[in-house]
Every structure is written in C-alpha cells, then in structure tokens.
Length: 50
Image (cartoon, rainbow, N blue to C red; front, side, top):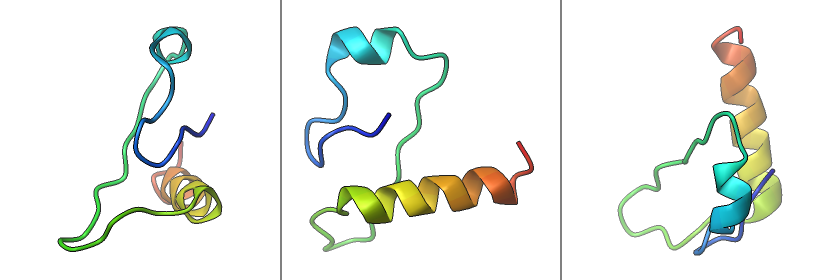
C-alpha cells in the first residue's frame, strides 16, 4: 500500500500492515509522487533480495 504524500497511510491501515517503510527525502525536496515512490520501494526491495 502507498500512502498520501504528506499524511502517509491512515492509522487503521498502517496498524494492519506487517511492515512499514519510509523514503527519506533530500534536503529541500518537498515530496515524491506516488508512482516515483512505488518505483523506489520496488527497486529497493529487489536490491535487498527480499
């Protein structure tokens, strides 16, 4: 599941997840759109071999 840019997932949904992850932003960056965040998350999961 991917949450909103600023708010993330609603608490009730986050509580039902087995794992949670965040993507740190570079200094001065405001946000990532959901497609970019999803691509980064999938890449990192594959990179780590999980």
